Length: 346
Image (cartoon, rainbow, N blue to C red; front, side):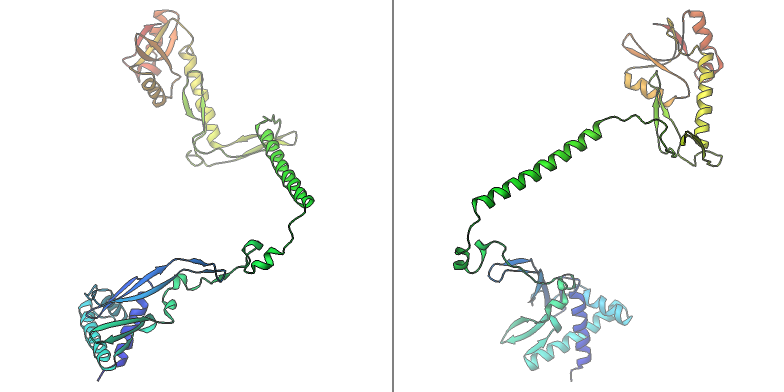
């Protein structure tokens, strides 16, 4: 005697798997295959038909792919091996029921019938319920807005055409709209391309990221570090003048001012890179880009580039005499970091 409770449980798992898979194999019986049907437009009924799926059955695909057994194992909390044996027993019951009645309902997917040695599959009327991704999509009915596509051709032929004056008014209206749109775009372009001078504007902000400034020697260095990179806590001090905020001071900006002041002192000690005849060279590079990279890595000094004899020499100070240049090369700020510095004439 067939235990139909077991049969129904197998079918419930088949339905569940068909909601997320396009192929569910019933080991030893066959596979139920899902086929996607794209959305289409029916010109006769003026309807947009939503996408859907249809189901077929292939008895040649009957190997155990593990999907049904894994679903049973998760549901019953048993091992995979025990689930495989369980599925085999229930499939045997399904085959017995099919042989006795000639038909086997596979849930909403459809019905399997035996015609002699052949198996015939009829999709179920409620197969759409196994496609949750497209189930909610409705069929849209539309009506043609142009009489040329109306179903009643004789009625379309009796519609009076627009008068010449109406056609002219439409064309003038469209031209006016186009001209107005072009005028607006031109005005926006003029406004955006016109520089504005703002004096005593009311603004305040905290600089962040790698904002850079370029000095005369093309030395690129960060203007303000990111907030929070300083050891002291971040404070905002606003000073007002003429009813407008004109000073924005932060701990990061204070650190920047200290670095600028220290650089000025070092520049004064080195002659501030005056255009002297002799240069204190600290590096010699084959290309200008290589020299510029060296400057970017050593931005604690104000450096310059001297192109001579096919080389690009990076110098840290200049002087009008060899003795003054050598004295600058021996200064602690250069000698301590660049002991191989040497003097070169321009």
